[in-house]
Structures are given as C-alpha cells and as structure tokens.
Length: 263
Ligand code: UGY
Ligand code: MN
Image 1 (cartoon, rainbow, N blue to C red):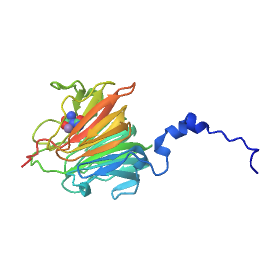
Image 2: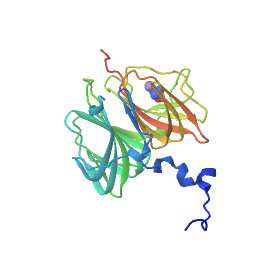
Image 3: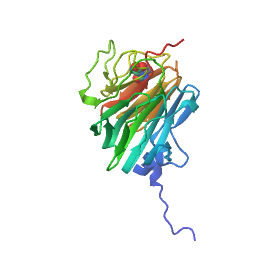
C-alpha cells in the first residue's frame, strides 16, 4: 500500500558515521596505481601465505613487478610464528608495528617491541620469530653495494634527530649512512600544518607507510588524501610533496635507495 508509510530521507540531510567512513562504500577505494606511483590504502590489503613465513601471512605493497628495486610488505605473525632468512643475496629490514618479535643472532636472543627494528645483511641466517604474535613492516632488496653491511637493531626514538636544512619535519635514519649500505629507512615526523619544503623530484625510489596522522600527498599531478595505514610507492623522478593536516602529528616510515650509482 502507499500513503501509509512516512518516508524520511535523513541520510540526505546528515550523513551517518557509517556513510562518512568512505572505505566501507562498495567498490570505493582511494587505492590507485600509475606508472610512476601507487597508493595502497588500508582497505586494499590482501593477505596470503608466503614461502619462508610460518604461521604468518603477508600483504605485499611494492615489489619488482612494479618496476621497483625493492620489496615492501607487511607480515602478520601469529602465535609461534617465524620468518626464515631472506633469499641468498637479499638484505632485509624489519620494523615492529604491533606486538613483539625476536631475533636469534648468534648466541643472543634480541627482543623487538613495537617501534623497534632490525637489519639483516645479505646471507644472514638469523631467524625472526614471535611467540604471541606481531605485525611487521618489511623491506627487502637484492644487495648491490659491494660493501660489508652488518646486522643491527634499535628503537626508533633512540635514533638521533638529524639536520634537515630548510625542512621543518623531524628526521631519523635507521641505518648507517655509509657506502656499505644501498638503502636507508627514514622516520619523518610532521606537526599538523607542516609540509615538505622541497617539491622533490629525485632518482631515488620510495616505499612509504603512514604510521600516524593524516594529510595530503601530492604524487605527479595528483593529490591524495591519506591517513594512517596508507602505503605509497614512488618511482624514480615522480614529483612528490606532503602536507600534514588534521589535529594530530604525522609520522611516516620511508625506504630510500641511497648511495646507488644512478648511472
Ligand atoms: O628523503 C626523501 O627523499 C624524502 N624527504 N621524501 C619524501 O618524504 N617523499
Ligand atoms: Mn623523496
């Protein structure tokens, strides 16, 4: 029957919280993939088993299939899980995002809590494991520098702040800045309203994970609203710029291939 039901359209007047969570909109994603950059937003993770990872799943964000010289993925380690060493000649950097992992390095058993990291040089035999579960960010690449990189580990906040020239963001580099290393992992902190001074274009590649905060990332001629959990791949020479917005600071972690001869 008609006439009896009163139909109101309150959603048109004032969207519900659910409607405002755009990531729940069917078929909608902020993820984007272009020849020189990609955004992999939180709702686009695909978890799968991966050789070498026991009782763990991984979600790849960047790999050479994109033309990258590195791989970037998340590892969701379950109880009593482990990650075998990387393939021969491959170096690995792991940062703990959640939970607790450990590394057996020689006779030492190193505990890695949230916000700590470890670097495994190529052909390291050290095994990563977790008793109660952990969420990890992993970077890997075929080592190319011909030096002698060594195992190291640390906690982000204990790494010293470095000078940034005209930039206002706070900068840490988690690996030694020597020619023994062909990449580094930077931690960058912005207060809301702070932005990159340099509208960067450079030969280096990046794999970025936004750990906290939100803002606008410019990649090429596109502008992406981004929030904690979003990941970004930047190819060589893609114009890149970030402004931190909202009411809380931004922190991101970013891979950069350094001291590699661009020729
Ligand atoms: O070091 C860098 O290239 C860094 N500032 N890039 C970036 O944040 N997109
Ligand atoms: Mn850059």
